[in-house]
Amino acid sequence: METIIASMTVSVTELKRNFAGILKQAEDCPVAVLNHNRPEAYLLSAAHYERLMAHLEDLEDARLVRERADGPFVEIRLDDL
Image (tube, rainbow, N blue to C red; front, side):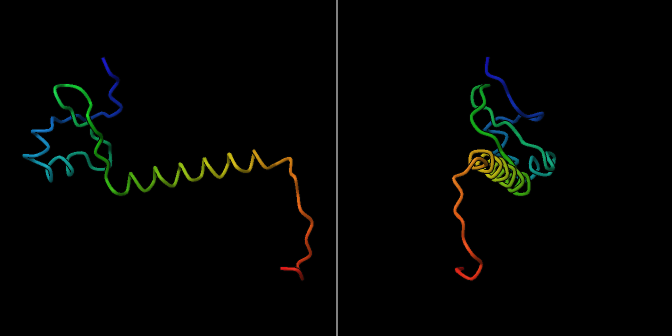
């Protein structure tokens, strides 16, 4: 059985019939959309998606900082900028 990473689940049919109601009920939490009782997709609010993307960008920035921490470094003068 597949792991469902959401506290709320709906069927594709239920989502088609009551999209606005499901969004309201979910508030800002992800919703697993099931097709034949298997997770087919996840529905996220715009705010949740934007926070998720910002978090991923932060993780990528942190990875780049760690990767570049030992150099090589280029010496420049402010006047050269």
